[in-house]
Amino acid sequence: MAASERLSTASSAMIHRSARHAQENQMARIFRVPHFKMQRDELETILNQRIQPETLVEAILSTKAAWNAGSTFSTEVLTDLRSIETRRARDSN
Image (cartoon, rainbow, N blue to C red; front, side, top):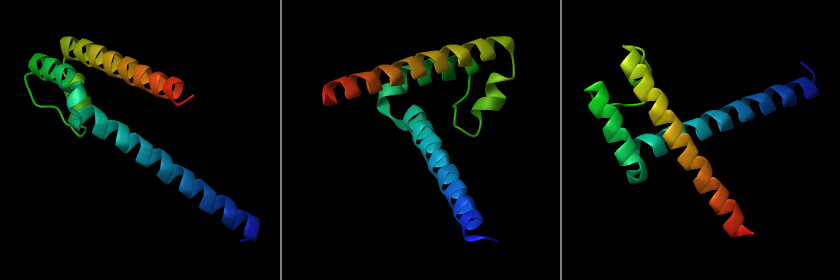
């Protein structure tokens, strides 16, 4: 394997790890940070179960009502996260 191929492979692996780490950080924020407690509680009430990253997909695929609740939860959380990031970017300038 040429040096450029090794570098490309190493770079790809690093980018993949970085992206996975960013995803895990987002999941931790959604499932553990008190800021999203109200949204989590609403979803858990509708699903009638405690949600975790490992169980969310199966739970929201269980019924149409669960799907709609999961969609609402995701929309609210993502909108809130984008708003937070926009505010941070604006405040840092």
